[in-house]
Length: 290
Ligand code: C2E
Ligand code: MG
Ligand code: MG
Ligand code: MG
Image 1 (cartoon, protein in one colour):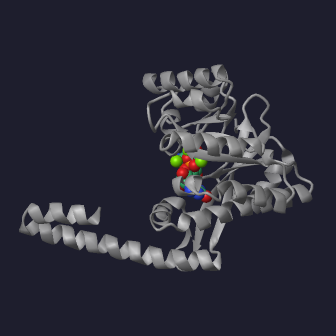
Image 2 (cartoon, protein in one colour):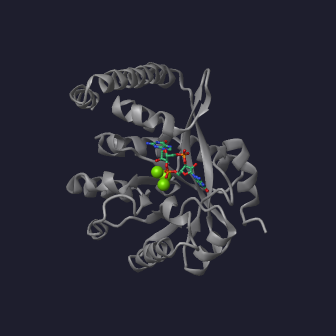
Image 3 (spheres, protein in one colour):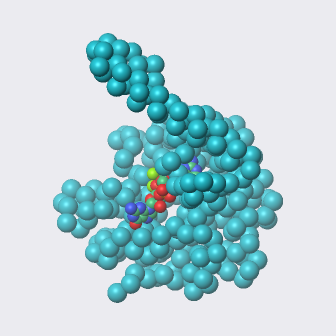
């Protein structure tokens, strides 16, 4: 990629060449720095999981949470996944990081349960590399066994593009995952491939409507139409449907009115450290502020 950009830069003139090389060098240095620091982070366990509650619209009950990784960087502080997941994926660290995420989520679920809180389902995001890795099913089953949890405590989130990449392998992997009782969600639904044929070929448990569609409801005609269509399709195919990125009471009301099952978003709670989620789990319900 860098080579291609360099080639393009070279062919488009002397000044541009200088400009692009400076730019590329900066980017290359940045990637190198992140890469070596990431290696250290993996070895020294500098990651932490934050959790964002998912709530059943009708009852207000907290039915689970999504685990979202943060990097507790020694000098830069808490970094969100957008700062490092891509490099981690490119360099292959993501498999090791992702395996830690699965295990850590299981540890936390068990710890909450041991502290007298309800046994909840935690969603973990799987990267493409991780989803294609031959050890994935074993890693999932080992993590559940280590903390004596049923499969229903985990919900794996993958995007459409990951699913579409190699259908036959995808179907096998999803079957193996679901046969352990683990749920399977399609993340950022609607932003990936437009082909819906794959929804017939295996049964996902849940569709997560991408935040980009939720953002402008109920004002934007197109987004309301798309959101309603996704909700209806999910219902008709017997899947659960959750809206991501719900920030306003107007969005909540629209989603409730149109039969969306669950919501996740800043309106209810931001992703937060495990100890801050605990009181919410204790109270068991979470309703939008009035
Ligand atoms: P995602 O799986 O779609 O996660 C939802 C993202 O939306 C999270 O960003 C969350 O903080 C954010 N969000 C939730 N509610 C709201 C809201 O009401 N408003 C706004 N503006 N944002 C909201 P975050 O934590 O920065 O994660 C970004 C992405 O990084 C995730 O998107 C996921 O694709 C990836 N990611 C996070 N954790 C992991 C992980 O453990 N492994 C892998 N492979 N990817 C991860
Ligand atoms: Mg997700
Ligand atoms: Mg998403
Ligand atoms: Mg996303």
